[in-house]
Amino acid sequence: MAATGGCGDVGEMGRANGETAGGEGTSERVGGAAAGPALAAVVDTERYPLDAPGSARWDEVVRRARDDLAADGCTVLPGFVRPDLLATLRDEGAALAPHAYYTVEKVNAYNIPLDSDLPPDHPATIVLERGNAFVARDLIPRTAVIQVLYTSAAFQRLVAECFGLPHLHEYTDPLAGLCLNVVAPGMSHPWHFDTNEFTVSMLTQEPDAGGVFEYCPRIRTPESENLADVRAVLTGSGEPLVRRLTLRPGDLQLFQGRFSLHRVSPVEGATQRHSAIFAYSDRPGIVGAVERTRQLFGRVLPDHLAAAGNAVRGDRLLD
Image 1 (spheres, rainbow, N blue to C red):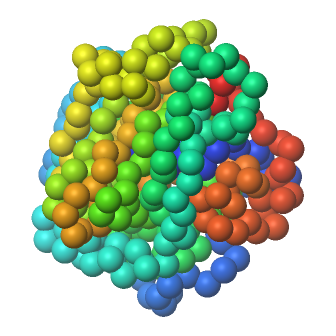
Image 2: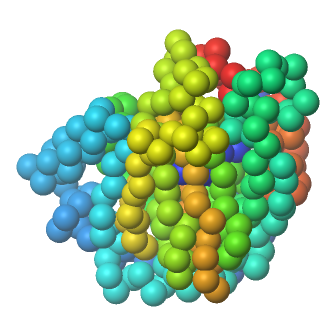
């Protein structure tokens, strides 16, 4: 299972030949190489004791997260980042946003070709417009708050335990391992499924209005696409299936987006919506698919070309 953050899907994954997880990108990152803030200065460790795994408070956090995930595939750890770091979190994202690769394209909820040979009433024939952007990991400074979190072994351990996994690996992918998702006013990330079973994300800047995370818990399963319900949501008649989540900057969201249709609603006002996507896998050496990487970041690196054809899939769903 691979994770690439709520609404930050990088597509079908391959393993890099002879590589291990956690590899660094080859391009220079924005900013210098000075040490970033200590983890304890970033995280509210009284609420989330990353320095005390196995403690009563740690076990309580993990238990609640697992209960939420079992109930509807989503949990939020509110106020994960300390309040006095929220301005830094926002400002760092604002500095990165101009480096995002922006595209507006016609897609469907399955991110498969629009001319796929499907019955006319299949929900994949419903065309949606996606207008969001991504800042790739090789442009994010090592000193950034989101980079400090992403590379922290203690952070990874907590996330792994919340998902009930023995461990997590950073992506080998130098672009998609960590990225900043940018949704500009008037734009949205329309209804879609992730190709990965779990995602980890954090809102870093909220818009003036709109930009709400909406999802349909487990609308499909590994055995069934449940096309009728998916079509109902896409055509506006499936409102009872939709849940809406209130997120604040610094909240940590864990989500199972492979089976839950989800979107970010159109952003309103003058302020962009920014969110960090933390991409992990329970396997080492994960690299994004070539074409999907090109769509999201406008470029591919030798790592992606080398990994092409080594796709890893855990089910037979459409996508």
